[in-house]
Amino acid sequence: MKIPALFAAELRRLTSTRMRVIALIALILVPVLYGGLYLWANQDPYGNLSEVPVALVVQDDGASLNGADRNLGDEVADSLIEDGSFDWHEVDAAGAHRGLDDGTFDFAVTLPADFTSAVASISSKDPRQAEIDLTTNDANNYLASTIGSQAVQRIRTTVTEKVVREAGLTMLDALNTVRVKLIDAADGAGKLTDGLGSAADGADTLADGAGTLAAGTSKLRTGAASLASGVDTLSSGLSSLTSGAEQVSGGTAKLRSVADRVGSAADRVSSAVPTVRTDLTAALKKRGLDDAQIADVLEVVDPIGTRVGELDSRVQQAVAQIDALDNGAAQVARGSAKLAAGAATAATGAHTLADGVASADSGAHKLDDGAHTLATGIHKLDDGAATLRDALRAGAEKLPDDSAGIRKEQAATLSDPVGIAEDSLTQAQNYGAGLAPFFAALAGWIGIYALFLIVKPISKRAVTALRSPIRVTLAGWLTPAALGAVQMVSLFGVLSIALGFSFTHPLPTLGILLLASATFAAIILALNVWLGSVGQFVGLVLMVLQLVTAGGTFPWQTLPAPLAALHHVLPMGFVVDAMRQVMYGGVAGRAWTDAAVLATWLVGALLVAMAGVTRMTFRRTMRDLQPSLIG
Image (cartoon, rainbow, N blue to C red; front, side, top):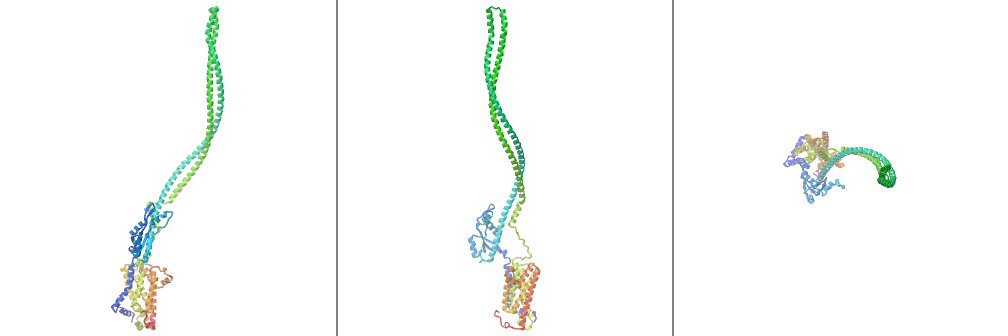
């Protein structure tokens, strides 16, 4: 018998009755059901998180934040409910606890009473972290707890970005205000500098004037001292003059008295002359003188009367002059007395003036010193104002001059400064597609394992009749390999059509599945040839080992060292890697290497099986003669 005949004979045996056909079909569908149902259930679990019920407890009392009354708890709750990432239910703390106990909620998120105030404390002297309380119940679902932790981290990130964005915008607005104020201050300092420059010029002029004033007051002080001395001398002289004038006035008064008496006498004498002439004429007449004689006598006497009149006139003039002299002397005495008194007052005033001028001179010198000090200070102040102006302008230039729109963008960047630029060399279509290589490989092993429950590994009739280990081995391998190929084609159809997974290289993907199934068939064949039913059990153990070492879910580097070592040996890990390369569009060289390893396992397993068939052909053992205890 040839290999096709042995293959046909085994198929006829498997389909000889209706029950065998049903059993065969059921076993062929095992990998389709296992892989298809599992990947269907996990096709996109993260896309259905909106169906996960979550309790949301808002206890926030609110607080003042950035100058406004805010309640971040309510704002976060509104944002979460609007986002719809989960099936949020806003309840109180008791309701959340009951829901976690009875499984109504998968986890609960609580925003405590001091949530907003804790966030606002970052600008206080007692800053503290705000807390978001996550309550889970692993008795409901462990992964739900993990997802809850991730959800809280996203809430924390969202709140942080919101707070930092608002605080950053406030800070940037404040910096812009500071910049404007610095520019205004710099302009003011510039005006101050200009004013101080003018003030400095004025102070210099004042200092020069103060110097001139000090020199003038020094001269005035000397003159005032000389004036005081002169006035003292004048006052002394006037005192002497007053004393002499009083003496003169006293003398002229006496002289006036005598003159008045002489004048009166002379006036009486002059007044008596006519009477004397008359009396003389009468007397002469009595004496008997005639008129001629009397005329001669009167001619002699009349000149005397005339002289007496003239003398009286002179005396009266002298008396008038003496009276005038006396009046003048009295006036001089009175005036000199007044002048002396005025001179004394002037002397006092002169000394007061001298003292005042001395004080003024001292003040003028102090003013001179102060004016120079003031000028020096104003020059320093001018230099300082110029330095202040330049520093203010330099400080303003260092602050950004951004528009309100740019500041908003900067605040947004400040709240989320680091973005993630995702660039995948290869990318799975979704979560289910990401698990497909692993579960397809595992389904392939399970499918072959299930087939060997009804497929005979080796036909003992053929071993005895043919005595050809190669043909017997290939015939024993061909049946499960062909049926496994049907399984893999069916599974590929479910993945690509029913589940809609995309394949960058569909035919190589199908080829890897077929190669994997054929390799698994050879391995389990070898185990059955050498160990019989025990080999079937070892195949189950190998499946479990490969389930944990293939690196289908977590990276294989996370495995314990013994299991990580098996990853580099057992074939399922190479199937998973090859599937990923051809399904996602990875490195073709890696896929070829994986295929080469699988081919090595295939050939090696067939050679091991052939060795077992050879032993069976030429040498029987007790196991060949007695049935296995486990089947």
